[in-house]
Image (cartoon, rainbow, N blue to C red; front, side, top):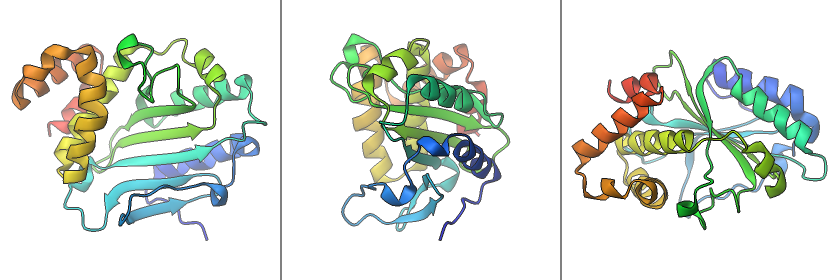
Amino acid sequence: MFQQPPNKKINLFINEFEKEFGTYLMPESEHKIIKQAGEVWQRFYRSSYFHTLQTVRIGDSGKTEYSDWDLHCMVYEKKINIKIAKQMKIFVNTFQAFNNVGIFLSKKSEHNGNDIHISKIKKLQFMAFMKDEIESPFVDIEIQGISNADMQELSTNVTFEELMSWAMLTYWRKKLKGTERDSHASKNYLLCPIILQSFPACKDKNEIDLYGFFEEYLKKNGYDMEVNYLKK
C-alpha cells in the first residue's frame, strides 16, 4: 500500500512526473534499496514509481528543518531515449515549486574518478529548494538508469557554479543538521572530494571563514534565499 509524503509540493511533483513519464519508469516494487547495516528510515514513502525518503532516521538527534527530501526513480534503459530524457530534465527545471534547480555533476578534471564526473555518471541528479517551506525545503531528485552517452548530451548547459553552489549548500545543511552521520558524509563526500579539489585554499580556513566564503560565493551566484534559510 502506497503512503504519500506529508508535503503537498513533493506529492504534486511525484504525481505529475509519474503521469507524464510512467511508461518509461520501473515500478517502485522492483527498486533495489541499499541501506547501511542497522539503519532504519523513520520517514519512508512509496508511490508507483518513486521511493521517497525524508532523511531522518530513528535514533537521530538531528534538526528536522535541515533534513531534505530524497526522491528516487529508475528508468528502463531499453525504453528511454534522449528525447524523453530531455523532457524529464525540462519538467524538473520548470516545476513551479522549485527554486534554483541544479544538476549535480562535474565536467572538471579535478573531479575525474569521482562518481559525479561526467565520464562515469549514469543518473540525472537534481538539487532544488522549495520556497515558503518551514521544514525540509531542500530536494534531491535522482533519476537512475540514464546512459552515460545520454548524460553527455544532457549536461551540455550544466555549469561549474551550480555544482559548487549545491555542494556548498548541501555541506552547510548537513553540518547544521548536526548528526555524526551527516558530519561524516559532508566531509567525505562533499568537502574533501568536491569543494577542496576546486578551492584548495579553503583547506586552511576555520569554520567561520569557510561559511563566510560559501555565503559570498552563493550570493554572487543567486542563492540568497537558500543562504537566508540556513542562516535563520
